[in-house]
Length: 244
Image (cartoon, rainbow, N blue to C red; front, side, top):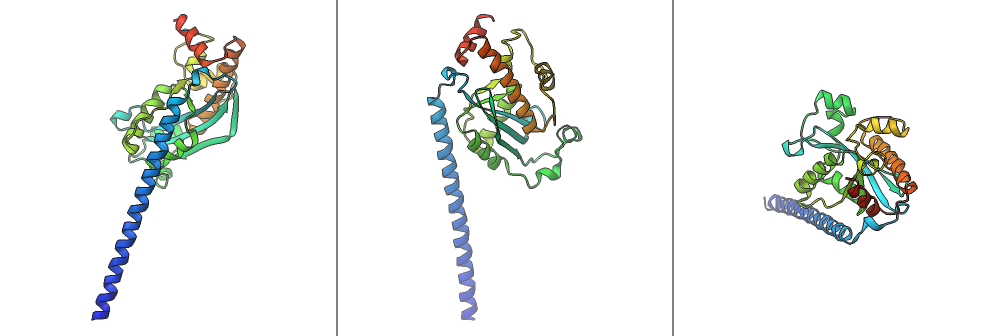
């Protein structure tokens, strides 16, 4: 009887040790994440992307697929795709893609649009993990997106909800440079802008494919900016401010 009690005691002790070890590892991981995010915020404060020569400007062009359009009403990110650029050069070997677990069942419309289904998301990274992977990829680089207000709203919400911190990255909309050729151009679908630029549309509504097409749009209009004599983003901002 005493031996059985002793065995049970050590089993319970082992369970407590494992539990404490797991909690300790979780806490250590959380502290490392927070330290990484604080360092990113510090780097972004020190960066001045407006005065970096356009041919040296490093950006990450990205796209999100989501369950809807309204993060404040509960819509969620289901995939993230991104590609890095330096100046007008796509670094196509440096890409990022992940699915993101969602607590919402996907509508038939969203699945048909994105080719993502509930079963695809069951074993996908949870939001916090996917977001940290994305931050580790983009670091403190400037972000570019097509219809950037959509990406910005979702990134602000998910960063606040799952990491309890601010989303501080600057996101530049492709329309910023597009206005160089048409100052009065209104927002247009990605495929329409691709057609105007002679860019082949492929795998539409796949986050990485959309990010690569957006990068090609950015490249097209960045070359135009350089042909017009602009050397820095600040000059483009000042020019567009003057013409309204």
